[in-house]
Structure formats: C-alpha cells, structure tokens
Image 1: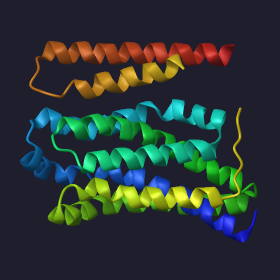
Image 2: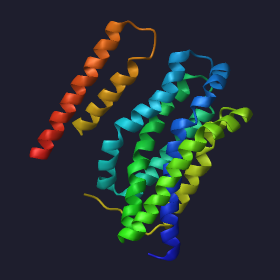
Image 3: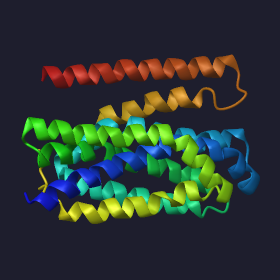
Image 4: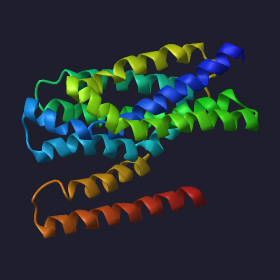
Length: 240
C-alpha cells in the first residue's frame, strides 16, 4: 500500500463515521423550523429523529455481516451512496412524510457505513500500532461530530433547516471519491436482524403519542419477548 493510499483510507473511514454520527444529533435543533415549513404534528417530527436511530441501531448487526460477505470497501461505498441520496431527498422534501420515510432509509445506510468504516481501517493497517493510531483518528471524527452537531445544526438552521441534510451530500461524495484510491481489497467470509428491528421498533413506538398505558405495556412486553427470542437465536448459533 502506498503512502497516499494509507492516507485516503482512514480519511474516507473518518468522513463516513463523522457524517453518520453528525446526522444523529444535528436534526434535533431544526425540528421547529421543519414543522413551521412542512407542517405535521409532534409524532411525525419524532419519527424524523427516531426513524434514523431505529434503523441505525437495529441493522448494525446485519450490516456488519453484510460487510464481511460483500467486502468492507463495497459495503462502505454502497452505504455512503445511499446516505447521500437519502440526505438529498430529505433536504428537498415538500411535506413532512417525505423526510420521515427517507430517514428510515438513511439510518439503514448509516448502519452500513459504521462497521465497514472500521473494517476498512482494520484491513488497511495490519500492524497493531498503526491500526491503533488510525482507529483513534476515526473515533475522534465521531467525537467531534457528536459535540459539534447541535452547534452546527443551529448555524445551518439560521439559513435553512434544509442545509442540515444537504450538507451530508458533499461530505459523502468526498468519502466516496477517496474510497477507490484506497488499497483495501474486498474480503468476503438473518432472523436475528429482524428480531433486533422488532425490539427497537417496539421501544420507540411506545412513547410516540398520547396513548394509553395498556398500549405502552403491550409494546414493552413485545420488546421483551423479542429480546428473549434474539437471545435464544444467538444461543443456538453459538452452540451449533
């Protein structure tokens, strides 16, 4: 691997991790402006935030397996591509249901980017010392995004709430451009994923409106049942 390739690989991984982490925290400050522009109720705005978090958390396990199967480079490229397209769709949305739908897809793309970005670094740096330094830089990108997200979101919202989504497009494109230059090769080596979606979906759906305690109790019970089923499936895979 050349010196340039050793630079572009962590840069692509860092940008990918940065943008998916940023999108988890930057949207909150723009919700009032989105409601004023697009209309809709509190529940719709809640799903703009929770839809991303739900799919991101639920599909991390499956996305890691997909990265192993099709290769980290291909999974990362697919993830940032879908992330850019869905960000653009959210940024030009004419009504509230549009960003709600595309935030679900965006969260799924973010779940693909997260594990594959780490895998890119692991494959590019077989030496433990250099890999540790690259991982530290990668983690710094996520930390900066988490802390700067609300501030950056406030600044962008002063111009237009749409920029909190549109800013993802050039960042994702830069990450995609850097990726082909990296010398990382594709490497190849899910009821569980569906159960994970069920867990997070039940937990997030509970407080989505002024519902009765009975409905919330039923959703909590469904989440607990899904957790038990997930543990059983994981145990069977470990045993056999």
